Image (cartoon, rainbow, N blue to C red):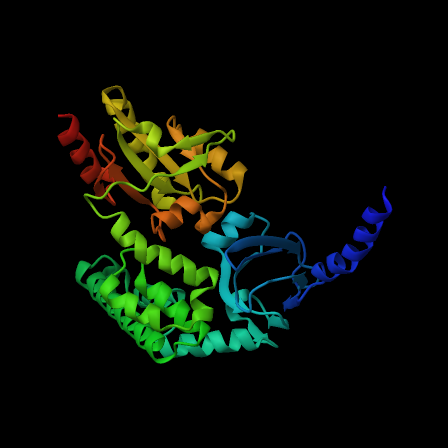
Length: 378
């Protein structure tokens, strides 16, 4: 090795050591749980997703790491019985929260649902924000479920009873959205103003309403990854409107080969956004298989853009559901570059593109999609 290279390596060593030093430490104690109990910790940091897991020992666990942003968003799931992460996340004990470059902890007698956080200023600020807007979506949903479960067996079969619960749920959600817009207007320098506006804007952005509030946010907020994503979503509202040319993209398929939308010109193409973990997406797949077999020889194509971040889960879902068309993904989850280009913030989502490359419909699935394809191919 040359002397110059040795000197350069020596200079880099302190920097590398510093970069690897954890800037958050998260400890917890949930009762006296032991194996097979596992806790799964996934978090988003400045647009990047990370995940970790650990077995509980006498109820205790610890996570350490390095984040670049001041506000990371986390999902934590506790698997009490050893059934795996998927079971814990979708049917088990799960919570969502914000944290920062801090040393913090949670404690509970029995579950994450009843846990108390200490030591995190970021968590406390996020809880104060949630209190202002009427709680998290999970909390509002939990209230509706409690209302339903409190009913008698007869009431649970009564459509009027169910409709009343749904009406109250929708009212609470609309009130929550209204308060989010108010919060974003009143606190243009608060990180949670950006959180509020991003969530309230949704997938179908009301540009006339959202754009002025976004423009009033501090430059620092607009330059965060979340701020840039919201700007993309605002722009996508015009780019992906019916009648507009579908935004072109190229992304790698399952074996790393680039697939471009442009290469399908002359075909009717369904650009379908999905993920292996998305229940409604998987439920729609048998219908897509049927439509693909019916119209493929007549010029119908599908490009499925996966918002997965675990390649094996993506590949297994393709094989299990028998999806024989084109698939692409950069395995960045919600930060998939094509998803951000199209302003996708919920799945399933789809855009039907005609032979000239123009968007002729969006959000079609089930019978509405089938009817549209029957109309096109007569």
